[in-house]
Length: 77
Image (cartoon, rainbow, N blue to C red; front, side, top):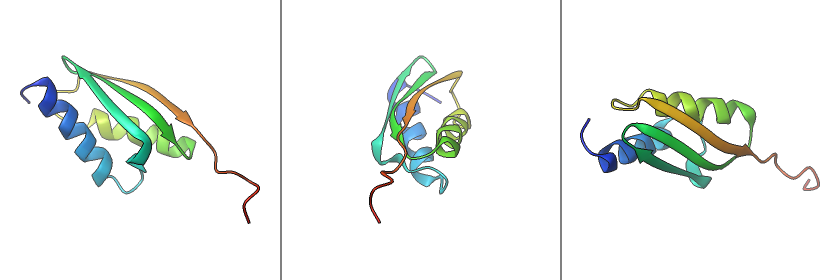
């Protein structure tokens, strides 16, 4: 994999492609293969799936998962 932009775009594409991940509130940063995931996901399994998806991308050396799990509001019916 080539440049920082290529890796970042590839990770974002992998998150979008993965049916286990809602990538709407995830931002991706990359510095020489060190990928940071920032934002929120609605469940812990999605937290894990996002990190696994990022790790699958060629050129990613390490994933720093800074995602927060924001559970859906229990008040809506």
